Every structure is written in structure tokens, then in C-alpha cells.
Image (cartoon, rainbow, N blue to C red; front, side, top):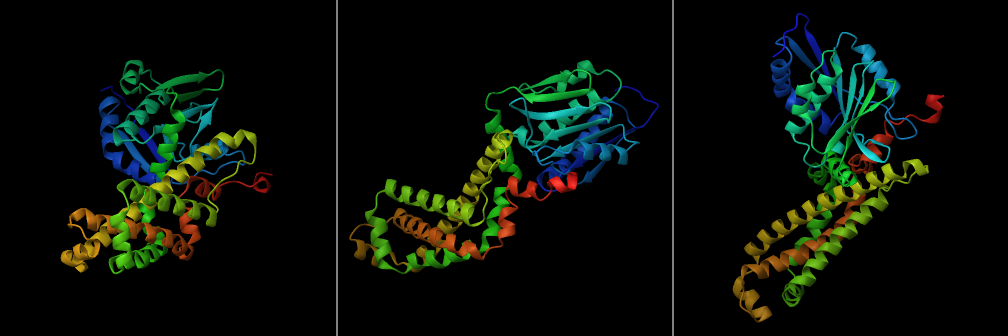
Amino acid sequence: MSSSDTPIRVMLVADPGVAARRIRKIEAAFTAEAREVLADDVTVEIETRSVRISPDGTLDIKALGELDAEHLDADAVLMLTEVPRHDEGRPLVAELFAESRTAIISYPTLGIWATKRRIQEIFMDCLLQLLPDSHGPLQQKYAQRWTQWTPTEGNGRHRLFARSGTGDLRTILGMTVANDPFRTAPKLSGALAGAAAVGAFGIFYFSIWQMADALSTARLLSIGVTAILSMVVWLILTNRLWDKPTSRDLARVVWLYNGSTVLTLLIAVSVLYATLVVTILIGALVVIDPDFLADLIGNEISFFNYLDIAWLSAAMGVVAGAVGSTFDSSMDIRRITHGQRESQRRYSEEELG
């Protein structure tokens, strides 16, 4: 631990949602580590706020300057944003602004393994570089193997780029995690209600039992996949979730937005499908008598016969659930995607003028 006569105050700022939850989870551990490395009198404070986005899809750096002005007594301001950042064709993990003692860390560029430890290490790396004293040996401790710092001549800015050639894939996965797809499924209540109502017919209709028994496993799987994809396409089209680039410069970022939207909905609809399969399976086991089912299909009955019935019924239900999704709040569904959330905090040309 280094000694210091002056207390060190660190501000942690996060976008609302996943970023804010991650910040709060690392607060205690980050504070303890900062005190161990720097001084006993390090204090850490947390603030939740969104930074506006310029028409070109980048974070408004002027707004970050205002953030620094609000915390003049802070020795460092570390912001975790859910905005995916790119520069020079590479994912930008973090960026330091020495004059304003501010660092921006992009949560999506950390990928699917954005663990509490990884976020904490990147925060410590940024903090040590923002403080006036040299902490070279300590910075090596927090360096990530898949990243590399690049200084920008003359303006006191340092950028941390992802080294890996799979940076875009890591960013899409990180954006999907930030979309919180497992919390998305409950927002599809209308779709779930419609899917459950239609899927329940599979428990009572003999023809569905016979069809499920006649279909091969491969065909049943393909039916399920087709049902999931159909609902994803329906949700994207009816809620206008597909973003279009307004300029060539934004094409790459918009591609990331659309990729994370598709992946988020695939996960959410798959969760809905799995829920239906389990629910219908339980209902079928309770309602359908094994001997009656055996007489009807002319074969011995096993657990897999019931699973086939539940799988096929759930596929029918998901297709019907696409129609039911029209009764869900369009705004709720749109908010699950990065592009739609960011459009809500985007400056218009008139506001900037």
C-alpha cells in the first residue's frame, strides 16, 4: 500500500440497468482493493445516469466534461456505459481523458464474460493511469491479455482496444447480456398467453398425439426451430426493431445493434418455448392416460412420447403466440434492444444546433 496525506475520492458512474447493477456488485470489492493498493482513505461513490448520444452514434464527450465539472473534488471519474464503442475499426474497451480525470469503459466490449472481477480489474487499471503518481508495475497486474493501450499524441487521451480478431462477436455477446434476455421473456406476456392457450390443445386432441408419434426426432426439432425463428421475425417486423444505418460510417455499429437484437430475441423466445414445453409436458402427464395413448398410437408408451406431444404442441403455441405478442406493449419490447434504448437518449440535429 502506498501512503497518502490527501484523501482520494473516486466516482463510479453507470448507465441505468445492467451497468448500474454490475457497479453496485463490485463497489465493496473495488473499494477494498483501491484502499489496499493506494491508501486507506480512498472513498468510492456511485451515481446512475445516462450520457446523451450525438447524431453520429457516439457518446457526447461534452456531456462527459459536464460530468467532470459536477465532480471537481473527485480525483477520478470512472463511467461504465452500455454503449458499444468502436474506433479505427476495433472495439474500444476504455478511453481515458487525463485533463478531466475521466475514464469511459464500454460494458458490451467486455463480452459475455464481463464478470465482476474483469470489470474491477479494468476499473483499477484506469484508476491507476488517471492518478498523478506512477503505478507502472501495478498496472501490469490488471492488464487484460486480450487488450492493448494506445496513447493519442498531444491530447492526453489513451484508448484501450480489444486485440482479438473476434472483437465484434464479443461485443454482440456483451450487448446481448446488457439487453438482459432472461428478463425479456416476462415482457412477452401476451405472446405467452396466446401460446399457452393454443399449446394446451395438444393435450386434448388425438390427432396431435398421432402426429407427434409419427414425426421423427429431426423433424420435430426442425419444427421447433422454425417456430422460434418465425416468432423472432414477427417481433422484429411488427415492433420495427431492425435498425437501418443513416450513414455509411454507422453501418458497422448498426450491424452490432441488429445482431444483438436478433440474439436477444432468440434467447427470450427460446426461454418462452422451453417454458411451454415443460408446462404442457406436466399437463400431458396428468391428463393423458398411458394405456389410452398406447391403444391410440399402437405402440408402447414411454416418457418420450409425452415429450414429443409437448414439443409439437409448444411449437404450435409459439406460432400462435406471435399473434398474441401484438397485445404486448410495443414500447416495452423495443426497450429490450440497444438501438431502441439509445435512440431515446440521442440528440437531434436541432438540439445540437
